[in-house]
Length: 186
Image 1 (cartoon, rainbow, N blue to C red):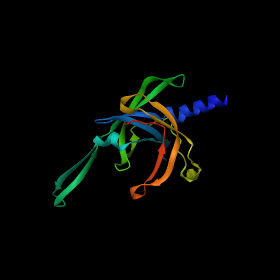
Image 2: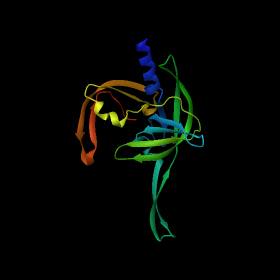
Image 3: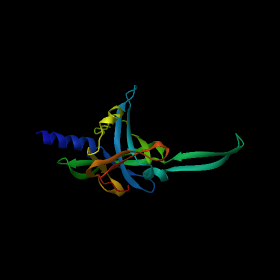
Image 4: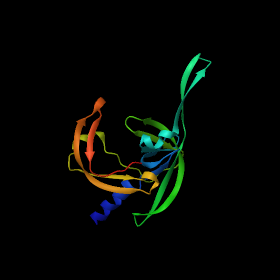
């Protein structure tokens, strides 16, 4: 029975939280990381993805602004489409259960990360449980890790591995870890 509870938890927190993102020139994956109500009772839901997935949805133009008397840069962010999947017998993807537009809230090209807010005033049932920052010291080499993504327009694929290496600092203080849970571009 404990085995089935573990399998169900992994589906709820890993597989079912994975979404597919359709951007201007790319397909990729994302993970639902938050879905909650504000003080007015409106739902806000967020998806974490890679910046390279939504890169072509961000346009920066330089135009002369007569009000200030010089050229200014103006950024335009084109919304993405986020698709959700539905499953039979926990694991068998039956297709797309629905989609919604999402706005690019924040991004960092150097760290290849972006945050999208869904244009959907409804609760998202499956949200990934993020590892708490204050438990960081509890992570060790040999700890199991999972990766799940809907790369290149595919339905979600799950891989498993372990943490192989950690705590190397790269340029500008970015910490580098290594895992053998394979992920592919997308």
